[in-house]
Image (cartoon, rainbow over all chains, first blue to last red; front, top):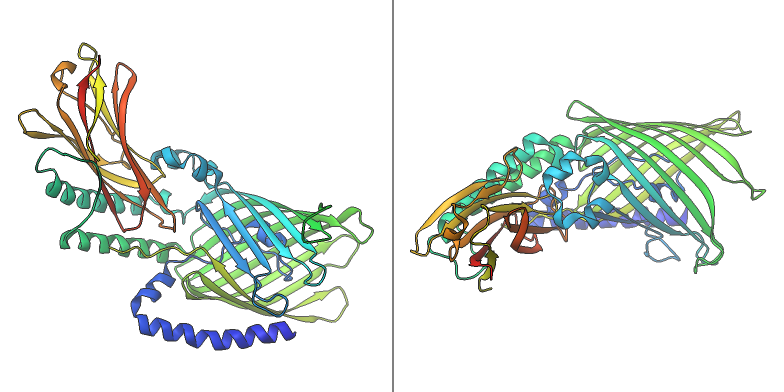
Length: 350
Length: 126
């Protein structure tokens, strides 16, 4: 509770600073914030999550993504959880990968591997680590497979290139390499590029995505990860579906098996989670319901409301409050507050 | 960088030039062939996202291209810019089913669009 109170106080103190910076620096940071999609949920990250909900939110592929969370550790502000996710297809074959090849086989290029660690206990250094995979069956938010967007972007690329070629191809070349020093016409076309990207993100924040994800968690009794052994396996079937331009429905079906108190791998559970988002990409609220069936225990029900706020590029604030109820036991109130940092999308200079 | 030479067989088959963009980026190009007289002619222009092949055949016979300069201006735009996002553009010369040589440029995408110029002199294979 003391930690939650500290984070809340830090958040309350931090937000006005962020707002002040935004107003001081004008539209740049505001535009920058708008470029970032919602909090990524790599499966390796989610399996280490100790909040009651275990939803995996589908997202579009990037070469590499990183996230850190739970910024309170040992009374300081070191992150407790760190995760990275990468696409082997984009990383390994990227140099020669054409956009046509990507579009011919998006399933393989969207496949991702993630890894995460979480310090479990500040005193003993006990550590949890995890690895996960996810496969995307469909992703209507992926800019590379958005035909209309790519066609418009290509038209702008062609216009920019023709302008550059007209300027430089006036005499036989004497050297090769990058061309610098564009003029006002190219600057104007580049602004159109930025507007086009922002429009695509604003329109596709709640696009339909369907994924399968799986992860395994390892537990180690010390911080050096000696004698680590698997203690949980989990798999998810996740879908996100758009509701008009203002909402998104996320549905998860997940199953897990983990080590019970007897240290045998025999504790199984199945969870069904649905979450409804309202809002826009950078500020949204949600309502969530989850039913978890755990073997030999009464079903666990979770209901919560929460929100996600992207006040500054790459930083996300998440908050949730609700209650959980198991069988005939009285309901327990649950609250959560997370600060997450992810690799930012960048607002490139013209 | 000064221009490199790409050797072609003067008695071989038609010479083709392919423009390729890596890292799944969007690209556009203008390919020009410069004659020894100093006159230039655009032999190909387009984008890498349509269904048209980005391969162009040079004038025949192959011998007539010796000493000419291939000059490609290409522009790359990332659909989804991230820190560390890269571009790569290749201009590849083929003859008789084999690659004769290539010019390429690779680097970071640190602007909304990145333009580069690839050029090479076509030389006689010894």
